[in-house]
Amino acid sequence: MATTTGTPDATPAAPSRIALVSFPGVRAFDVSVITEVWGVDRTDRGVPPFALHRTAATTAPIPLRGGLTLTPDRTLNWLARADLIVVPGLDDHVTPAPEPVLEALRRAHARATPIAALCGGAFTLAQAGLLDGRRAVTHWNLTDLLRTRHPEVTVVPDALFVHDDNLWTSAGTAAGIDLCLHLVRNTHGAETAATIARSMVTAPFRTGTQAQFIEQPTPQTDRDADTLAAVRAFALTRLAEPHTVAELAARAGMSSRSFARHFQATTGTTPLRWLITQRIAAAQKLLERTDLPLPEVARRTGFGSEITMRQHFATHLGTSPRDYRLAFHRTPAATGVDTPPRHP
Image (cartoon, rainbow, N blue to C red; front, side, top):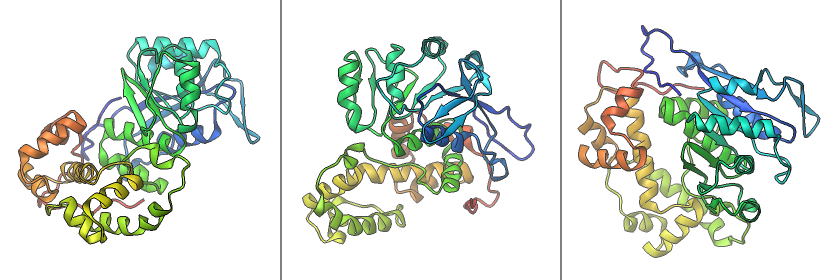
């Protein structure tokens, strides 16, 4: 998928081409998520154009659960033109996908086209043999089934989404939204993903794992949730300041050990990892929206130094702050201050 810098006088970039793979049995919810992320024109809010096409073996209407119908507008041959292929989850995870679909996915992967599967869509990729010897995730309630039916797949039990060899898989339902927004963020920047997320009234990204959603009694976690949310809000409004687990725990009225345990149970990640994730997201926005020098971006987001910020960008994003700005800086701020965020 192509990236854009999107300056006002630039020639409009060609739309990124997204292929939604459809066949009888795909989930209507996942089809809706894919359509909401890539099928809505938000160019008036600075989002680059997307060309989303519904592909299938034929263009005959496909019945979906709930009395809905999906009408493909391209055949599977169009996958050869796609920048990204997205496979919805299935209503019945043990039903084989049509062989033309599996073969089209194999050819696309051989061309190195990125392929993302939402929720039970991992079963479709596994049926195609694409996940053999690779890591993948699906809904937590389906992990044992995926292991049993496809023992050659390394099933990751608790991730929200997993990337392995240009193949993306996600956990259940809401994690499909997380993955779609993550793919937008990777190719068009954090601000574009945040704009889409705001219009969908969802978080631009969630931290943690799906372990936090597995059915289990968590009365203490429930009681602590409001307190921990207040602590997170406090830290977010003071990202430039140094924070320690001991300090945050004291604000929550807990010991450091108890705070770390309840924090992980609530968010699926540790306090320090959560804080680093928030600082990276804040730095991405400043790099996209402003011309602030890199040391100032590092200071404002709590990294302390450009070197530390660069190390975290390399670890978490696989790029440097300077290269990230070159790829995604869309709205230069002549005054060197933040531009106001766009509203949905």
